[in-house]
Image 1: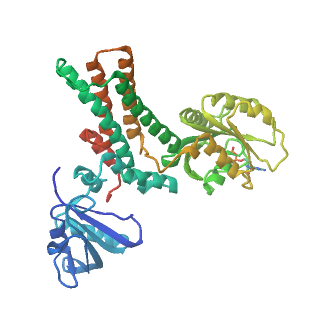
Image 2: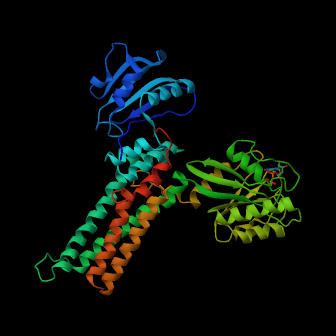
Length: 455
Ligand code: GDP
């Protein structure tokens, strides 16, 4: 890690009350002194940590703005390095000018996530907690924010570490047996080892389960709205997003592209695609839309299949039903403001849930919200328990449980203890990759590349 001093605007690229330019690194204070003059003429270089100074930011002899500079001394800062945060007026122009002045005074532009990466490399937080910083920033609801904060505070890492320690304890004894078979070594019975592996495995499986049912809250779920033309898909999409997003007309087949939208339904995020109606057509352009819709349907985890309840079921409806067979699926009987003609009992046979609504006047939205929450089991999500943040962490947990399964199988079948030891080591490696203690630099780079600049 080179300890060059980096700078970036830490606040959003939009007008606001306050803008913050963050400078971090060995020379943060000297660089800030070149562009900031405090009203009492005090030098930031002489400052203790946790101090605030009022003054002017000056560049090339001109005052850019009044500002308050916060000084943090290493290691007592977010990054663990010397840090200055210049709090100025939150205009787009002003923050950019101050950043430019800091760069001209010797700072380098920070890469995305570089402040947090430095915090990780300086041991201020582990990789799992670093990832939750980004999750916290992008959380769209209270539950998602609570879960991210909980991980940031280290609850996940604590639980993972406790499993790691227990498995390591078994490994140490196993290694001693393998290396010094003739020595007197503390007895640890097969049953005790099995118990340790089984407890760790079931704990990790619990973490994975919680993540899976909370993913709709933290990351969002790929969902798709399907149905033949004119059943009201676009109107439903508009009702859910609150915007006139899709083109709504009564000419069948109007929506030809896949429109993707993030919808917040209660605590759940749906990444919804409103698609061209899936139906038989000779029109080439329409066919492209129908193909896109079919592909999107294959990828989706949740299908919202729309029917016009004011008309009887048709062959096209039945064909769509057959295409969603292996998905979590909800039937929406739309247009309940009109007399019901559809065979509801027939639809109920094919779907996990059936919701009747009228997209036109907004009736039934709450029922849809409840049906989605029930089907995705989000009610079981507990943001106060240890939570995974993202697929990378889930994958580490999954690999660890698979290796623990191998340990359990090997012990049960009476395979040699060195083989058990190898599997247990692999489980530990997967868990250390999760917390970052043993993550490759490629993994670390990949994690931080997904951050925004200034964080
Ligand atoms: P899509 O082709 O499935 O996307 O259907 P649209 O959303 O374009 O709607 C087709 C027609 O049905 C439009 O004229 C809508 O105004 C009408 N429509 C949609 N939802 C309702 C509803 O709940 N009640 C009634 N009466 N008409 C609706």
